[in-house]
Length: 282
Image: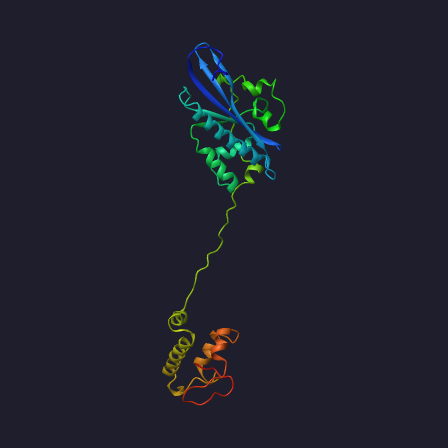
């Protein structure tokens, strides 16, 4: 803190401000300390960090990366300055509204944005503000160049010792850039409901061949009960003359591979000789 202090007096309070910015060339974050003493205020650069911008990311995403870097750098500065009279709240500043809207919003976004917003919001003692680009020292770091005679880079904005002179707070609104990162949510238009009948229940228990045999006997019993003079007897070997066979054929047409395999092929019936043609067999 010796390089920041102007007065050799007791420090009353230190307020930390962090700035972040991104360009197509790189991202940058800076941390400044505003030191309050009895005679007045002193301010100066505490630490800074920059790196090349990752290709393929939009400027809005790069800004979010810069803000994430800024809040992490601020957290590291707080840890390093343990023992000093730090203010209870810290402040982060950025000059683009899209990233600021994501940080203030509680909506659901895609993974890249959602993960970084969650980490940024976990720093509950940090307040986020908007700052004009001309007052953002991180803008210099993101674009590169010489900082030897850049007072803004070494001291930070001159207005920040007095909160009354801070830029006015803005209310962010959704923009096409912020909406583009919204998480896509599918809409359910219909719900499929499984419908089962009695034959399905029998088939689950006995298998296809035995289930059809049971149904055929039940249908024959019903037919013989309703038409005593036209009782059907004997094996189920004729679709044309057997009502149960016709009913099963209507329910399960020949196009069904399972039914075609079981019912529409000649096979021997035990004790009744061989079938003639492709009859309906159970």
